[in-house]
Image 1 (cartoon, rainbow, N blue to C red):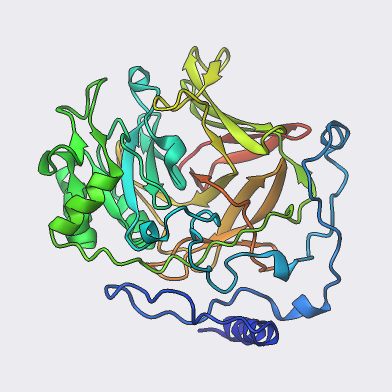
Image 2: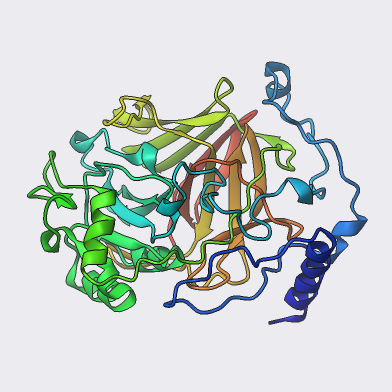
Length: 410
């Protein structure tokens, strides 16, 4: 551990002692994970910073029309309002910051399901609105795919399920999860089995009701039941103890930021585009997706969950920049575990953009987010959608409060 991290740990220890907070109430980590030390969350200069007023409601139309006006001091942090800074109270989902109806559901591993986005005829997807986190990343040939994380609640039907990718091994280990996927390239299967062991479940090895369907490449496809998947994993010898999921931080107060964000466009190619539009009525970002057309004439429609008929709505949208390693047009690795020093991260919540960094503290703990001063970025309590963009991807503000990401490798 370098000098900076040691100083940060000491600073955090002083703050926790002063507020009589400890890690003692946090459930022990899984026997399959290693012990962790206190998280170096706060920079030593935090005591010298003067707290400022945080917004407590959505920006007004007048504020959204003048996004150049700074909201508040980006260096300030309200420690008392952060949930997760020293672990989570019983019954609070560490992946959303929200209370669960039944605390026992948290005493297990997350179920993580691969979901197809192409062909378009397989849409709308099933069950994405039930997920705590959805990862989105490029898989080659202008296509992207999703990895949905189910922990605080189950979903009876998730899919259509598609094949696994190399990066899934890293992401599933970060959250101590169980992976459900379709058939994969033999080289990918080898990596998934090596890194995850019995926690990787291909659809042709998993009977119905956990995974039901006949063909992962068909429109009707294959779908997973997350509660049944948990029971199936336990029956097949998986240690289903709750993993250590500390790392994310949540706060209801608005974050420190000076940039508005009412629209986020993510474009992979001339035929692949997604958009998030901020809804002031709910305080959430609503997902739109291309239905037909091309780059110059996309037809965007609401992306709904086929189970509910409702448009996908997420509290947080995050764009991570990471290195893609291309072995073949449809075979990529993404460097997630190697990011110990921090890569660029863009966090969107409550109609604002926070510039920061993301890093992996250990291979078996969730991704963490920091602002430019090294302080934790607090997400809005609720679900989170995470886009993994290549390092050469461009990002710009095209109109006030409207942002565009154009994906590019590596």
